[in-house]
Length: 527
Image 1 (cartoon, rainbow, N blue to C red):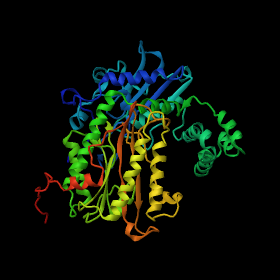
Image 2 (cartoon, rainbow, N blue to C red):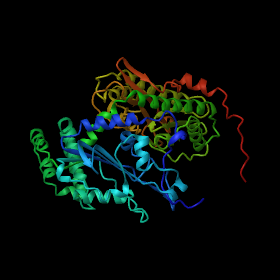
Image 3 (cartoon, helix red, strand yellow):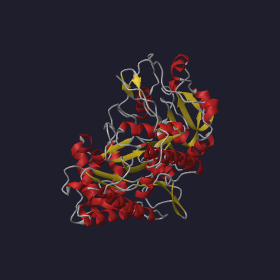
Image 4 (tube, rainbow, N blue to C red):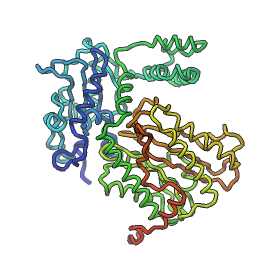
């Protein structure tokens, strides 16, 4: 392998798939965001950093989803500025400027063609683009803005001495422009946001969380506002303190709130890509059901899923693939996938393709030998019933937590009936996670977590996990079951986008009895 000298570049021109989001989509998203900016403000967003995998090898670059949503730009070392009011830049009135990594023939011979500022204008439709090397000298008159909106400043960055405009330098240059010290954190603003969003609903819990964070973080311990909040004697006193939330020019909450509301509701173009990502993920589940046998390994199962995604043109997995057999299925985010033989275990498979930026999240749990044992079937059908209850709560206007409440009620009652727990409140031992989250550019996508809205996509994913050594009959040990589907909320109710993956015991066993194209696929043995 040759030594890499450059950084990731994006596909442009005729090699780019035709169904990528077009530049008009991204322009509309920028304009929608700009309309919601506070008066006399600027929003500043940074691209994702490159991450090292080992020695001189980097992980494949993946753009920050917010940055991609607004620009379509898929390269590192970039900054986007969006202005609430037009500004004159180099004699031209503009509402936006993207500082892009510059063209570099030597680097491009290693890692592929870069857009550069001219490519940004032509292919992304951002009229005002400048090379990232010019950001250091760019005059950002901070006094002209009442607020500067950020999500956060990237941290833990490598500094490439050969590149004077890598993300490390861009962040350092921005800190200097706005008068923020290199070691200054914004942890207090993140705590402020928790208070702002949740004090009215759960003030006691918020107060405890703030106390915990202050005890753990010296940068918060001396904050006057937080001291007043945690020492408030009752709910009215807490509310009065919360109402006096300090306002700062650098605002790390407003942009997040705007983007959460925007990204929660998907456009038709987004839904088209999400449907494809979910469909190929469901097909992957079907093909694995047909191919699975007891002598297969967790790694092999993962490989079949991901092969299906690649066959359909998915660029990545939406998150590290989870394939857990037996007790491994009771570890919620088990990603080692290294068990060499599945045997008679249940196999929990939580995987999703990422297609042109949008990710699926589909989970099925199946018996490696094709037949559920009586105990496996009882737990599976309880989780299935809970998921059905969650589906019924998927209605426009329902609280986001309605799916969780409906499913958890069924799980708790069922666990009592099976004798695994004695009272419903003990169910949390075996049902540790919530049932729903938003889905989109992130597997746990941005959203308001308010009442359900039409054209948002959420998961419904109840689960029961009974690890070895649990305080119940041993016959239940090592059974972990999660069933997860991707649900589009509609004006008429809901649509299961992942319905192509069998869900019932009968459907799963029938699918597993079918032949697989991989049945006769044999590789030479390694010596």
